[in-house]
Image 1 (cartoon, rainbow, N blue to C red):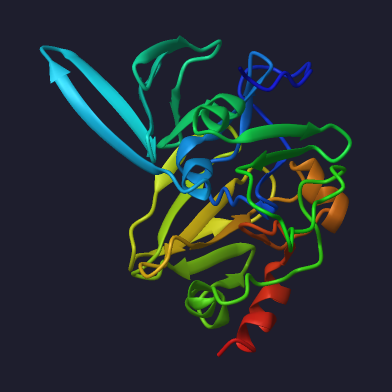
Image 2 (cartoon, rainbow, N blue to C red):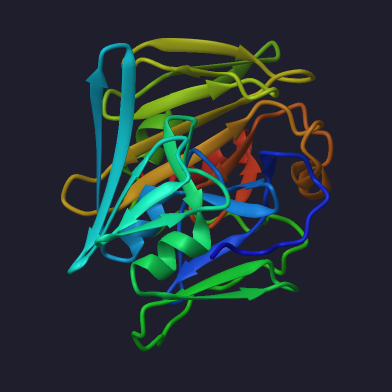
Length: 282
């Protein structure tokens, strides 16, 4: 009941796939899909909500044992699973997964095919395009474009139309680069985290000013802002080093500038270019 992608990479390796629900690309603004035991693991919330499902999370304690339970419901279809357990309750049945639910980067991960099909959707895999297509049966009239699979990013930088509040406050007159260092104040309505190249993560505080070196051995900053009136989120990843990321280096070379990637459409550009484009949003 999981996608059987053939890989030779280690556990938790990055996976460059596009996930679409009824032709619309699912955005993973912070935590990205990864491989575990030849299975594609995805952040549960983003795919479930794209399918129209409700997702809940709760902790319960029994002595020194703490259970973390995730629930998903869509109409009469309901699931309940504990983190690090292979046992999932689907309706009134218990299903055993090949790979258990995981908590990574503060997101709950589950095998992609399982959760989609448990919620009544159909899943297809296009190897050449590295595309996972999830269908609920709705007619697809205007599908999003699909990357060709050769690079997870593209250099045709584009804002997500209608979702640029964060861009205005973050890039237009905020982020600055001087003496090889990036400085910015995290907007009060935003959430962010700094990740080292090895994956260690530090959450940032809204309203506080941060400075990070740009260059060898540096990581990335994930920044996002929710839109309360909708289920959309505006998100960006600022890479402080393009030299250690093969996809970024292929597109931009070995830049001494930060590289900005737009969540959702995966388009990117050097920060200096993004700052100029942000001025036009004001």
